[in-house]
Length: 276
Image 1 (cartoon, rainbow, N blue to C red):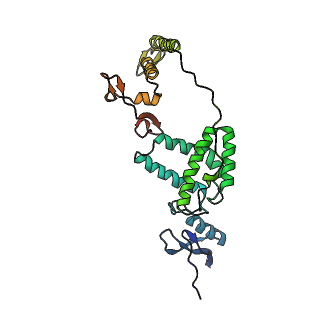
Image 2 (spheres, rainbow, N blue to C red; image 1 turned 180 degrees about the horizontal axis):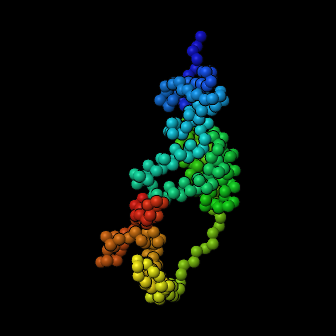
Image 3 (cartoon, one colour; image 1 turned 60 degrees about the vertical axis):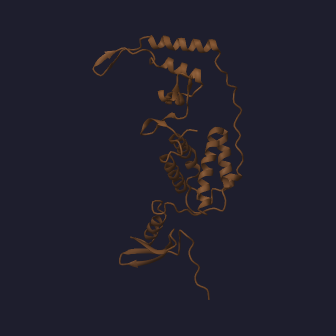
């Protein structure tokens, strides 16, 4: 005779119930992520309540963090994935703005459609249909969402919750044709800067602040210089604002560009050195 087969990792055996006085107790063996089988139990006023409490305890993401299987909800997988990205941000391997973008797309688009599914239910057909629908609204969002799902399902595949990453087989997302970009003509650039200079000297509305009345200019006096700097270097505003005096060589008329300025939720503006 052969012995009873061992439970797979992170799975529960048959739930048993017994009545103790006026209460019910539900108990079951569960093989944890360390390979050990432990018996867990929970009580309730009824048999159904006791079983429900035990199932809820065993499925608690806080208790099973870092353990995934085919039945794990996609919301739990997302928590594991974004937890990894947060550690990359802390180590300087990822920009906080990238993490914020990925999380925003998941919260706004992924979670409402996919969050209640298990990992195994989020197969090629489901993910392909989701991304095709999303592409109709915004190809760029669909492209980013595809990357997020690929990262999530890659984690699931490495944890052997699924045999392969299904995102590899979804349809390619092609960007919609964009209108050609037209650069400012020299005369237009000069006209823009002159108008900004005029606005930077033109009085605006009188305001009361810090116990005194003052009249600021229509725009901040530094705006013309910033725009002129961007026109002359073709830098984006985040990169332009991140250039400090040590990055500039006046003798060679050069500036080294790398970091950028980003806005981090709850932290305000900060210098980001993780940009590529």
